[in-house]
Image (tube, rainbow, N blue to C red):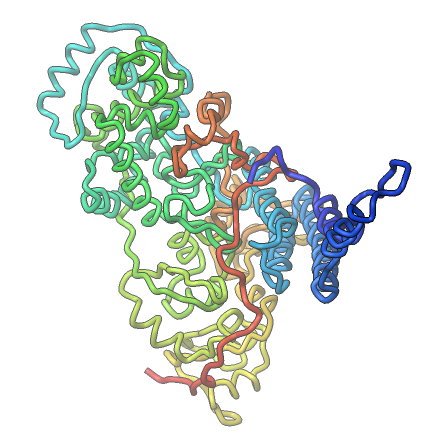
Amino acid sequence: MQLNLRTSPKNALRALLCVPLLFLAGCPANEGGGTPPKQAMAPALTASAEAVKVDPAAQFAERQTAAKVQQLIGQVDRTYQSGVENYRSGRLDAARLDFDFAVDLMLSSGIDIKTNDALNDEFERTVNAVNSLEMDALKQGNGFSPRIEQSPVEAAGDLTFPSNPELTAQLNAELKTTTSDLPLVVNDYVAGYISYFTNNAGGHAHLVRSLERAGKYEGMIKKILREEGVPQDLIYQAIAESGFQPQAFNAKSGAGGMWQFMPFRGAYGLDRNGWFDERFDPEKSSRAYAKYMKTLYNQFGDWYLVMAAYDWGPGNVQKAVMRTGYADFWELYRRNALPKETKNYVPAMLAAAIMAKNPKQYGLTSMNVEPAANYDTVTVNYAMDLRLAADVTDSTLATMVGLNPSLLRLNTPRDISFDLHIPGGTKEMFQKRIAEIPEEKRASWRFHDVRAGETLQQVADLFHVKADDLATANDLSAGEGVDTGDELIVPVYTSVSAASAHPQRYTSRRGDTLVTVADRFGVSSEQLRRWNHLSSNSISTGRSLYIAEPVRLAPSAHTRSRGGRGRKSARSAGLSGSRGKSGARSSSSGHGPTSRGSSSTSSSKSKVGATSKATKKSSPKRRR
């Protein structure tokens, strides 16, 4: 859907309402004088009668649907504006609830979003509007999501490096001992970036952080690259794209995820809807990346041209080759046939790969590499609160969110299949415990392991439920106690109550100090300082504090600005130069979220149903 073809929802609805009127009106009256011959009049009347023949029932249903859509869009707009007001007032949690509710209104309306242009347009722009708002929040460090760091290539900006023949010769000599399944070369351009990443404090720090994050995904990515038959050292392209940050989002172009895919509908085999965006799933997006790189190699037969095509778009690279007659990246570089960003992109990626493969040589031996992600995958097709998933796997909400960066919300979608990642080694425990909770209750109910000294009333107070209800759900008789290790089903009846158990924030009152707040919620003052970026124990009255590890939702609002670099313009050359069915990251096709009035390609692959599947009743408490 094109950005510049976007019409307002009201105008779109008027157009829908006017369709049946056109049929009723027929053709304009004959304004010429005189009476036509009888032979000419009869056919005209017959044609006119056929033209106005309309099914009244269908016409009435169409009007009703249009009216319902108009009413729904009005309600969505009001809810969205409430979110904007909360956002601007700094009430980010309330803003998130408003934005989620606005989307829920459309998903649960009973109208097929995909077949109704006006509603689909409203859905897409509402989902993407949060992105542009988030960009401002991240600049202030208070967004819905954690601050996304610049990649090393972004940090370098548009630097140019003077020729240094001695350095180039030295690096070429050292390159002879480097083993790679990707053709590596050192010339003045690559040597310049190696020097920058080695000697510039900022450039070195950005490269180190990227390589530290790479440890979390390296094994998984290389396995996928090997399975898809492409060089495993292509993994280092993620340094240039995102610095190995799976939730990186470019608000200018709409590109997102570790591999910075554009949000084209149905492209790359990655689903995107109002519940999750698989561009932000490290495993699925890496698989899509490997397949796409293989396709590009089959087209160009040269890995440097493939990298350039990934950045600038295959259509643009093909045109440059045809225009100059050279199917060689470095020749295109020297002839200025490439945009500056792409000219920097390939040498920077090669420099990062060479340095990563020679850590001792380039001072990269003291890194704190993140441990490999360890998770099991369970496929669910029912709504489930991530807090419950954390409960039944003995983990935390922050852990569950971190393992599922593609989720837009704190719950899985209803009636849409989703591959949920859970801590490694907990799959059997998950399946056993989740089976004890009715499927239609998994969006709000909780699970609790009784700790030493806890009573039934204390557990009930923790989750804001009645002790009698808790006892009934677990088949406990009146006055029966609980023992350490007992597993209890907690019947939380509303999502609000579910959210209030283990609250995330606390507003400080007169007389509060960091120590008293820490004591009240059973955490340390050091944790409070870290979670709230505080430098001392003093806090002002009325300040909103995280009292649990902050949970940052991912894809719909994970934004980073590319600053003054040329990435936006370099990737705006049209669909033929983009990573969709014919290429990479064009924003001129209307797929980059830029404003509330813009439209991207976020679409609902499957409408969320309003009914739940019937399941068995809850089981009694289990003793270990």
